[in-house]
Length: 378
Image (cartoon, rainbow, N blue to C red; front, side, top):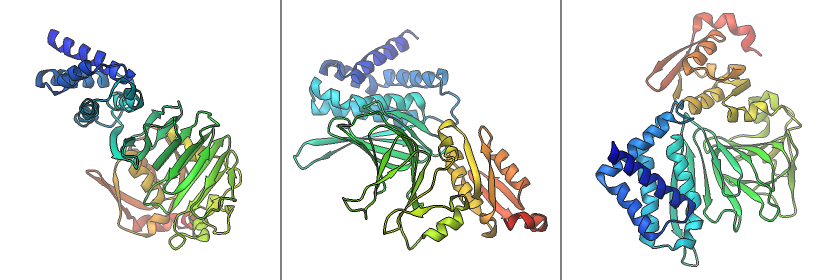
């Protein structure tokens, strides 16, 4: 027990200096040896698990992958040591270390540090943060902006963030609370669709397997930039508006979008290409409630609801009947289990379901079909 305490306390002390950017090369060498030594590394892993068990986030349903997190931290330290970067350069990588620390404390974020050569022949480092399916995460960026990542989402930004620019690439869904800085605009690149802000709050949903990118503005003002947009054209959003960028006209046109989203019937194109649509002021709670662990559903087809449930609970949904995909549902989900949610869906529609491992199989119940026909026509 005494040896464990020595190893754990020494690791915490040195890792704290690594985060702060004031660790010497000798101390860095000691930190690396602690993480590579068989005895001390076991103690450190146990300490990490104890921190998770005793911490605020111990109620998370996601089992923390401490081995992967441990390897990522060790890799980041080894990279610094092998490159023999001096104390000044540690200031540019402290943010990566801070996020790595957050990774094993929360147990719900996977962080990677990648390095590539730029045109000048120097190393350019990027930080990538991922929220796995079944969980979400909160990140504080170097400019003190906050980002909430929904399940199955990731962001990527340079370690020079807040020095030369404030550019972030998003894949998935993120809620951004942007710190004000007029000199460096905050730009989110969501699969080629860009949202530009100075200081505001907004939500962006940009999953690769969906035909649209959606942006909802909570407060402030943002500029929207599409690939087809000319430099002289500027499109701005007002609070409580939602913008929808259609990624591929051949797969999803405006009329089809209106049919799929009847509560968005007033959407209208705002550019000649008709690939960017805007709503009048709406109730945005259903768009951003996921940040507070709530899922608000408004006349949503079961096909779309299943996608959201799949990300929230990390389950795969299989439909044995195409007809039931069009059934629409409304309601609010908070702490319910997946089985409780599916029981309610079964109660309010002619379906049966079966949960097998991590798969939910949904089929039509022919015997109850006639009972629900008057409601299904709506």
